[in-house]
Length: 64
Image (tube, rainbow, N blue to C red; front, top):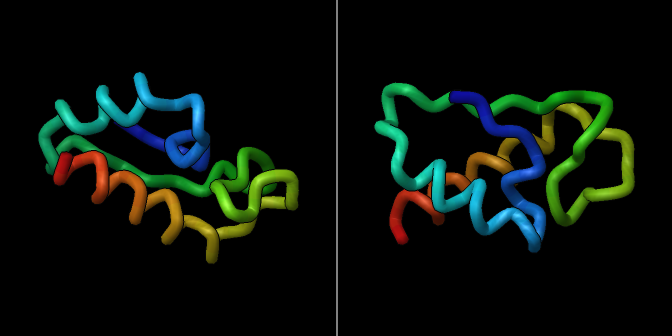
């Protein structure tokens, strides 16, 4: 299952809840560049360096 910057959006609670239920060995984090930049870069052109923000939010979801 793949997750993009949408995972970091305020209204994406359902997506984060889903991510929390998926086994870690089945997860993939991607940039979806040049679209869907994660918070705090939302509204800017996405780039691979921003994937860390998505991964951080995924880690938070897994620890919830």
